[in-house]
Length: 276
Length: 88
Image (cartoon, rainbow over the protein chains, first blue to last red):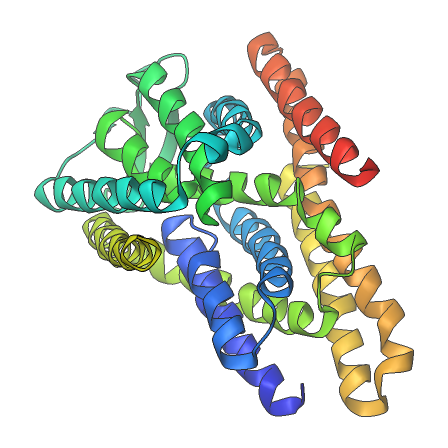
């Protein structure tokens, strides 16, 4: 690795940070293959660097979003309990279901969610009345689209929890972050505004990643130079993404989410095709 | 201290350590930079833990018993899972 490599890794980190700030996803699905293809890093090493990037993305995005009231920690922690349980039982799923089958189901699911998302780009979750009282897991935040405080109610909480369990379960199996299923599910079916869903997801991914990052670190599976360069890029990307995202109408964020979901769906179809 | 201050300070500290380590490595070579880079990565891994602590503090301040219990459950699951994995 030399100075030119450092610059490439900083750029990759910048992209991961931007995706994290805009959509609340860690960007590992793009970063890990990029590190293995471009630099020939072993998958374990790339995953170790990826986890560090996810932690950095989560921290950098949270320092931009928490003060805007976008992060719902009360809901987030509950969902994290679900995804942790799903994650712990991931090993059991892996014994009974093949990787190809999981990839195929995931491909179909993400394609379906992307289609539903595209049909509901103008779907509104907020109550445009600052004096309304949010329900148990709901909240209040300053909505940049309206320029004033709004309220939202969280509905179908059991569905949100079920999605979290499934997301946690398949994420270990497929090497994907759980946010990819959670963000659209919260927004489309559970009453959570897109900015709150993405910010809450960004807040959570760092906690999920820190459950395994120290294991990679302790076993020498984190290349410190790659990680350092990627983290520096993430910080810039997250700052830029947060500003850019706040200035864009939320419809654009939903459109971008649908595009990313379609792309991941395609990747998973290819994976299923290769395995079977 | 507010969540924002703690989180921001932790992220900036870890990034500064990693940037210094990377700069030293590019300028002087691997030996002198490793300590700084490791310290930066450890500081980075502490940032989500600090977020969990400040979230818990905010839950307690709001006297929100359900949220306190949920956050404690998350801390327990993550902590036990990590301890088991590192002990293997």
